[in-house]
Image 1 (tube, rainbow, N blue to C red):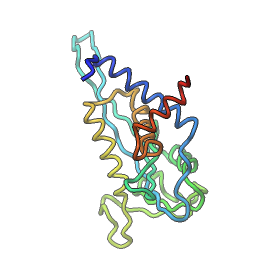
Image 2 (image 1 turned 90 degrees about the vertical axis):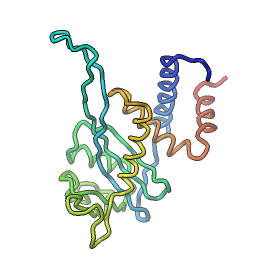
Image 3 (image 1 turned 135 degrees about the horizontal axis):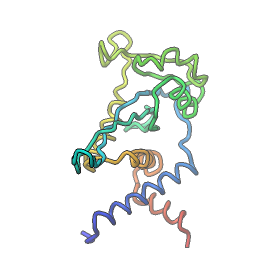
Length: 206
């Protein structure tokens, strides 16, 4: 409608995501969970496409997948749920438990699948008091305890829907994309545009 080129629009979105990232750095997401609201955690693989040029066999313009893992910690206190999302190089215990300890309040109850890194979670994360699991190989919802991670699955579906609308995302942009979505959930709330204008005015005072 404004007659802008795709390159200009891309630059605008990059600046918007940069401001969201800076605001989250200045005002980090307040730790959540605690003794009242259950927290769900999960990891998900994000697929993106990046252009490559193979001069030796003349395969120009082909696209190769380089998948990225994202770790999510979901607060069930809100509807729709809000979360903390982080790109992780490894899904081992040391990586995931460090993130959980940073974003959770003491006394948190965490529900997850049976991924090995979560075993004895309450032992390795002091802020976790109770840890319950569901074995997805058997059921999505544990028939005995009712434990599930459906809020996490819903969060993944929502994030990937936005990526699909953008027709993919570059590897280097995934972190900025996650920062934007977290800012929308925790700072934008029901007045995303108005709150973002306030953010811009604070970042660029007259």
